[in-house]
Amino acid sequence: MLQEGKLYIGTSRKPDDSINKGEYLELKFGNRHGLITGATGTGKTVTLQILAEGFSNAGVPVFCADVKGDLSGIGAIGEPKDFLLKRAEQIGLTPYEFQEFPVIFWDLYGEKGHRVRTTMSEMGPLLLSRLMNATDAQEGVLNIAFKIADEGGLPLLDLKDLQALLNYMGDNASELSNQFGFISKSSVGSIQRELLILEQQGAEHFFGEPALKITDIMRTTNDGRGAISVLAADKLMMNPRLYATFLLWLLSELFEELPEVGDPDKPKLVFFFDEAHLLFNDAPKVLVERVEQVVRLIRSKGVGVYFVTQNPLDVPETVLAQLGNRVQHALRAYSPREQKAVKTAADTFRPNPDFNCAEVITNLGTGEALVSTLEGKGSPSMVERTLIRPPASRLGPLTEAERQKVIDVSPVRGLYDEDFDRESAYELLAKRAAKAAEQAEAARQAEEQTQEGTSGGSRWTLPGFGEDEPAAPSGKQARPRSSGYQRETIVEAAMKSVARTVATQVGRALVRGILGSLKR
View 1 (cartoon, helix red, strand yellow):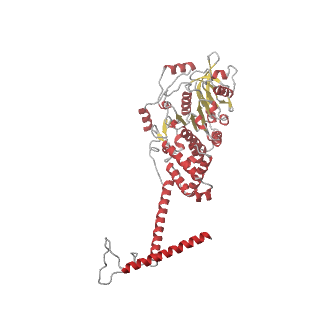
View 2 (cartoon, one colour):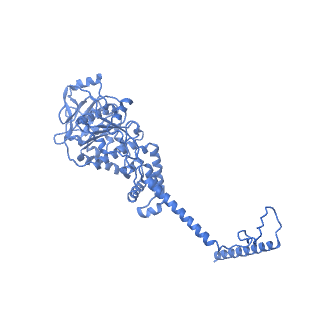
View 3 (cartoon, helix red, strand yellow):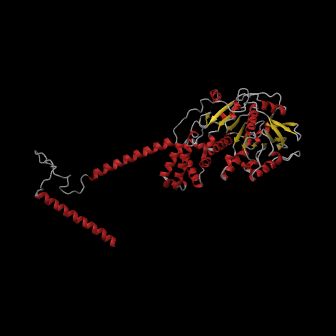
């Protein structure tokens, strides 16, 4: 059943349930993208697993997310379970051989795999705005922040770098607005609050260094197989916006870094985007346009993108039109939206005169799907009702001990497991603030000294007010002041009377001057 240059997906059946033919995905069309859809429990994860196995054996690296935690079994040899053996017999898969595959486990939190990081600068203001669900005004402030960082030589690497830059922008909003456009302090404050929320959700683990190198998810083994990078996403799914933004960032990085290769004999990398609806939920138009652009153009870089989701309506039509290889598992049609989804799915296939697609979609069994792939000169094949092949690797998750063993012998062990915090915007702004404080303190002290020197001989004082008492005559000690009550001398009383009189007259003159000016 296996053929050179093709991935075996399963075997189609005739209307009488007899074997029809093997269904394949040609490697040369593997970069034309694909779609795997179906309701919960219909076999989407197994389809993803067998495609990842096929690409790996063909020497194509794979990146996929393990949303439910059961995809990790691809790193262990399969087990001859009864229902798997039965499926192999049904489709005529002989011999049915088991094998394990080269796997690299990744985890944004560093708990179930190697740490995955990127920097704020690499993320950019557009994706960061998406991550924070920012308004247009807040997105404008973020664009200004990145502009200031670029022009000011302030590397934005982690959350505290952006927080420090926003503090600086808030403190100097008036001056910066004249140069970069209006900066609202309220928008700055809103962004800072969103950053605090991201920090509480664990995003500080994602932003920093060492940043992930694209080449490390495009590795091949010594025997020529492609490494399968599995992202632990079960915990990450608690923050679905971070999950979707991360995968979109990774897709954008592949698009920007990889060279043009045209249409290679096989893909350079295959990227599976599980729970793809999270990418498009409440996404602004500019973001959807970005996804469409990347999907359309990344094909020429040798990268195939396969969206995995429950409902074909989850993917915008502009993106759906770019997906050439399709596997449609069973859908339910209880609600109007579900009925529309069934019709949409059926209409996207090249029809088969032997059956009605819309009727079959609702009656497919577990592990059964409608399959249509590109063939010939790139035209879609006629849709076929297909029994999906059983996986060669383990069906189910690895144990914690087995996962740790894979991590310990990983080719990227030690490259990403420790944080590295080099000098960036936070440290540079802190140094500038400390230097400015020192200069302000020095200027203040110099001004005080100048005032003291200037006022030392020119202050207007009156006798008997404490600071200008005459020194004691030579040879006599100054009379100490008494803490108790003493009757004042005639001279002292006269001097105080003069002082009060002068003060009263000066005060009256001032009041008259002020009142006179008010009246005028």
